[in-house]
Length: 318
Picture 1 (cartoon, rainbow, N blue to C red):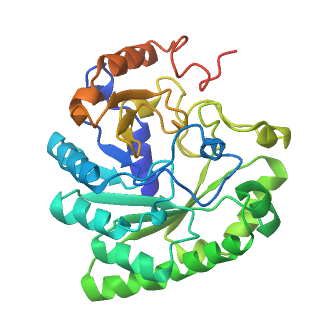
Picture 2: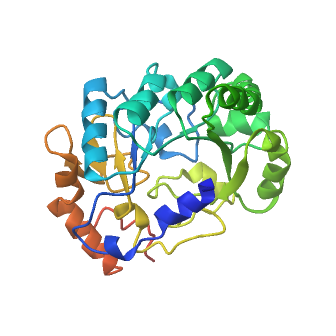
Picture 3: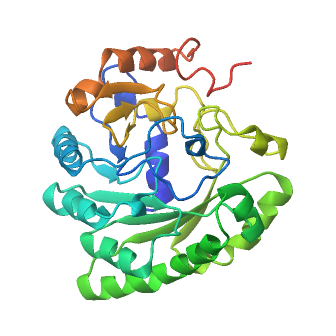
């Protein structure tokens, strides 16, 4: 199954999930670390509105066992941070695949720290999907948006170019083949054209490239981005080519999101904690997944009226 097919399956809310009390999500993203070595202006994480630390291994292992028992099929070993900053990432992948038996383990990275050696370790551990977020047209724009030195832009491209030969070498030896993907933000106008040209540097190094809209990040996209004329969309509508209605939002029904400190969030972009639905350090995953707070939020989404909830500004009522 292609990565876009998997994305579309998650962003389409199946009938059995269109309720307030629902089965375990098919997919969960868990934050090994809240830290990131970029400070992108389009990402609310750069505003540092909550603590950004690392998850403890005992909590990680307990949660993965709980979720697999509950029926979660796909586990993403990232949320809002850069997981290659976690020095036990390879162990986390192996635990998810070998100890817990998750059929599909996936990861998104900015690519700057995914060296050939570390990618090899991830592939050997059983990673099923590695996606690179590639959102900058050139070095100057990278420095302006990511707010770090341009050397990381060159390193990012170099690492992506190494991904396929490293992946194929592991596949030839072990028979396990990790999918390689890249996403980019489909900005407006001239920026969109520049991104298409920039993608030529990496498109032959991955299996598939796809576009994402500029999300409003729960209404936290900075004014700096908006002043450039780039228009973020309301809510999380999935990928370009299969955009969903902002209400009801699929993230409230079909995918779980867990912060490094064990909070279950109702949002893909919970940069400030307003979407926390339960504390997984104190209660089991499924209890939080169907908590009273989550039930009330789902009811509002099903009624297509989230005024007065944490989701109100994200879907941008006028």
